[in-house]
Length: 159
Image (tube, rainbow, N blue to C red; front, side, top):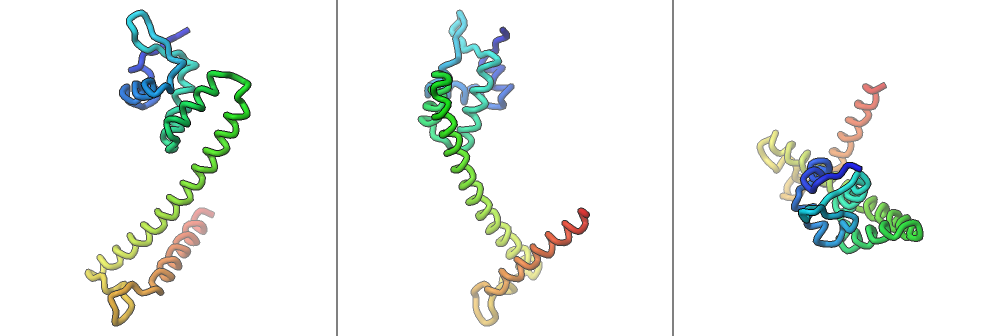
């Protein structure tokens, strides 16, 4: 069976060796063996575990929970129910996070439009309700209409 050193895995998985060493220190790599020189060695089978660990880490799963998941993996089929439930919960959490990020992105796009409009006019007052220094509430409706128009135009051109 082919084996890999930590540097090989780092390149293959697009992570740093420091990251892999951190995972090992935190107990996330119990499957990794060591060679005669004391260096970590990995097999093809280990790549799947590292991929799962990376995904969970990038999904903001706490290290302790990742460790629990890996422990269940090491225990085998008797933990399939726990692992499935874990993934269901992580999926729901990630979907909530995506919705929150989409909301933030929508707001940032609105503000980008707002400032592009002000920049083109060379004054932010173009966005203010007449006689005030507050943003005109109708302006957001105008922005939303322009977005819908862009969506309609792009979907018609795709047909």
